[in-house]
Length: 193
Image (cartoon, rainbow, N blue to C red; front, side):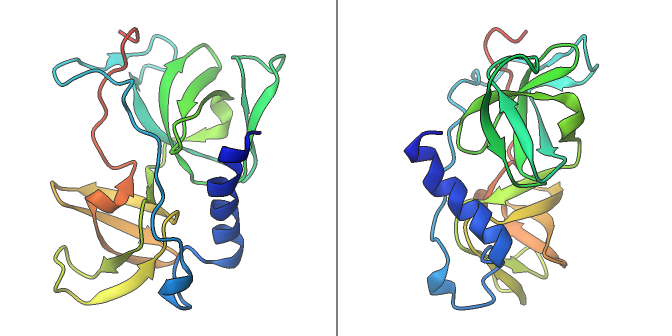
């Protein structure tokens, strides 16, 4: 595990354990921004996603980690070494390639590993990229329901152009789409047609 991976993921783990993702204490203690990896590998507008022969689902697509401990491997088999162990149930990921029982995923930091299909859930989640607010209605002058720090995982509902319906830590409301990783429309990756 590289040192540059430890810091953001340590924050995510601590946020989950101590509840720092939702700033019930001073918002000044929360991390201000999370800089997720980019989707530069995805093609330009106009390229269509393909339907996988293995799952019958589109690739790329969003998914989430099913369990609190998931091993990401260097290749599509348990014979390959573990490159990363994720410790965050619900973490949003992008499925970018498939084999019979394995899915290559890209995590919010941009790393790509293979995960057994049984470790993934179809449930849509998103991760907050900066400190923000959950509003009762999709507008900034609405009642504020909760504050969150960067790295909060929320269940994702319907999204419009600017707002997404979310649920996190028992609170339901609206978050600006720009504050979420995992809410944007995906484009097909080159070579994945």
